[in-house]
Length: 74
Image 1 (cartoon, rainbow, N blue to C red):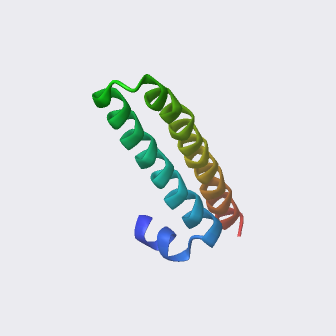
Image 2 (image 1 turned 90 degrees about the vertical axis):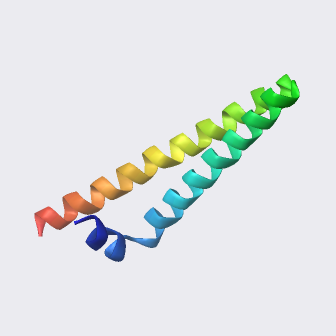
C-alpha cells in the first residue's frame, strides 16, 4: 500500500514530506555544529528549525489522512 500511495500521492504531500525532512536535517546539522563548537546561539537557533520541520511533518500526516479517508468513501 505504501508504494501505491506514494505513486498516487498529491504533489502537496510530497512537497510537505521533503520540506519537513530538509528542515529537520538542517536543524540537526545546526545543532551538532553549534554544540561541538560551543556556539550556544547557533544551537538554540536550530530548535525552531527542527520545530518547523516537525510541524510540516504533522501537516503532511493530516494531508495523507484526508486523502486516504476520501479514498475509502468512494
